[in-house]
Length: 106
Length: 401
Image 1 (cartoon, rainbow over the protein chains, first blue to last red):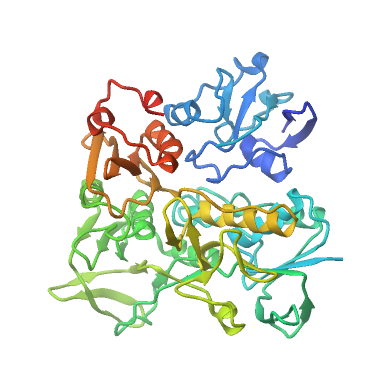
Image 2: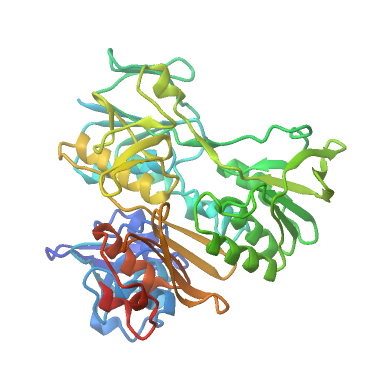
């Protein structure tokens, strides 16, 4: 179980609890987080669950695979902290994770 | 209080309800469907759900509790049987009558049946619903023989899943190439080779004469031979469920005809597989069998019902996971005059670009997310791109956008 905070472009934040084993995207969808769309349902075939990881959490997450990196490159305004949340699996180590939701998804 | 009734609790129907609440709709929402489960995602049914890698909870579009929390009424196992547009009321299976302000038809589609002698034998399946996937999944056992009838995406995905489970798999296709309806001969040849190289017996130009067996199917009878089978899955296309709309006088023509707002008549919308919609970018009507189409039409209809006039104007995109091959497609390649390959088919790492009169109209990418994503941005603009540049791996896709 991890408490994960999603910060919207307007600064509003919501913190949700996501069980271990789910992906961050699945937790966001279940909790109705605005801006996390996940059109392909988590098969790493679109980029609509894109979020920015708070810089202090960058070192904690396992690095992205090539297929994720390729999609991110063409996501909406990609940055170094960009991740596809369907590729981040929740563990206790992610308790407190902060993610910024982008203003748009492509 | 305004009421929206959604006829159909599949991917599109479920998303319509979710999008209505996201759009701030405060009226009553009732989702009616014939299946006993809450709306779920269909793509995993031929892949990770079928092999048991993904549990039911993770296939659901939302957990069941979500609907109560968001004040969405689910009438499961209770489809809309008929409706009267002039009275704005529906009748459900079981006879209950409900009035609506807006109706959304999301009745989806059903597998086309293959009617040959023996097609009612046991262990012959079609895949559309969770129930179908559960029934097929039980029969996918290592060492047994699966014959897949139809070399489309569904059939090839099932073949890939079954092979991964250790079955002996044969794909039988009536046409002279697989994926003939959806892609270019080059891609068909590539996927035929890819399946054969991974142990699938692919038979082309092979029609089915009948099925034989002793209650259970034992063989698939073709013109020249009988292919032994313990399990058969048939995937030869779908038929849109337009009956509910047609019987209420809504115009249908191989799909419920909707406008770019997803409206089929006054206060009646239709979304997903069951619709035929105008695509302004392509300049023609399309009936699409895809998740993108289901979700985006659902969002469009929901926005219009919630009071924000919205049009559905997108270039179609699709994906298909088979073995270690992640295929991602953008646009409709029909009518292309030039095909350009970038990367290597031998390495399972390439993209095919389709051009018409010099303009990029579609792309198929295998294990090439950059090419796929770049083309999602490029194709709607119909850009003129030099084919030599597209094929040149030293020029990053970023520079083409």
